[in-house]
Image 1 (tube, rainbow, N blue to C red):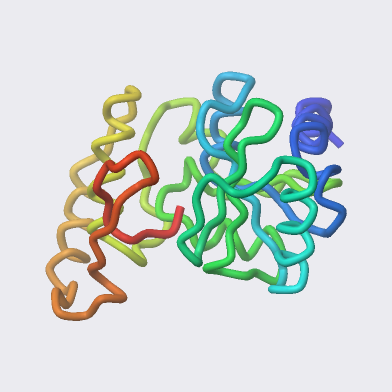
Image 2: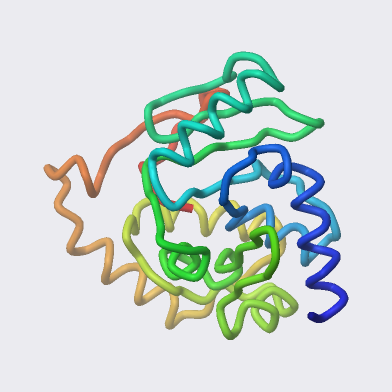
Length: 196
């Protein structure tokens, strides 16, 4: 294994994976942060293969960190070792590779389990160039909101990406709550429902 990958596995095992006692993995923004700045600055999203693994992890976290700081039925937050750990129950995946296929931007398409780093083929190239490349658009309104967040961090999106996003937004059914749910982060900031 590449030394940087070994270090990433060790990092996430020490931060959360070894504590949970079940097969799970970290994916998305925390992995992006690790490979871009060497540490996590965002919430650490932990994914599971099924509901049983999630339930066991919740019991472990309650024993180690106390009650969750947030629970909306799709994600449960815990403060643990100086991080916000988000246990994700809204989506279960067969494995980490399936998880990264679901993220909107390639710079979020990475995961780490107890043994390996999984990533989109252009993850490192797009991360190094701070370029937003669309991978998938399950929630285009949320993705539009996330573009703003990324731009503030110095990322850019090309006109082709903006056009693809615009076309996806055009077909959103505003009456369908699965495509257009307006919610709030635990701190009160408004958000559209999303997967990230």
